[in-house]
Length: 234
Image 1 (cartoon, rainbow, N blue to C red):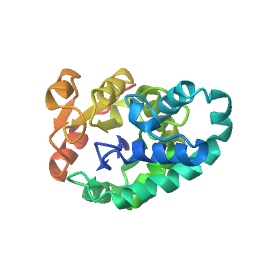
Image 2: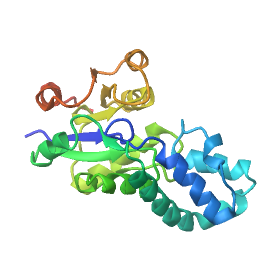
Image 3: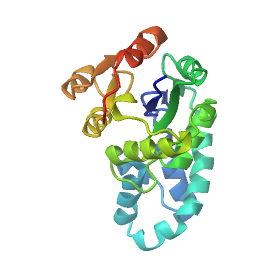
Image 4: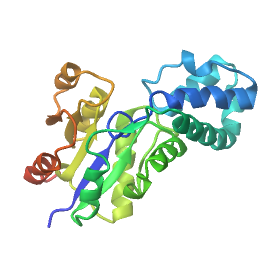
């Protein structure tokens, strides 16, 4: 039996919380430093570490910000949970959690998360939807600046956690952005794009994913893809 690893992105792929992370950064910075409106000026094209690093530099807080990072994580988790609960648009993408339930019961498949969210943010989001049980391991954006490193971290952590030396041809990265696809291809993994997120289908097609889905509501179609792919020797 060939063991396969499915590495999922989070925002735009599995869930959509409609900017709650940005709002939670605003309220966290207000509580900690008396500064409000910081999240509105930030670009979230990087990982959370990149966002926070940029924020600390712009506010001339770099000397103290990361010394208080553990405090930031605690408060941010509280504020993020509040924001998600108050936002009546927060939702799971089509196919979830059904597709996770399906693979959870298949011993040859193993699940991991790879997200630019800081770990505490990802866990808070997943816990709100009851998804944390499906992802015991992953890669996060606490101290990494790009998605390729996040995915690689998730892959390495999954190998250790599952005690399985997954071949690259048996690893599938599922994401909603061109960065997800390009990073997975650079690492030699199979790439699966979904058009449920923040980028249009045309941009995703330009990144040349191995497969592209409108969404993951058709579990049979998705499983046919991951079962048909032959393992390579890398």
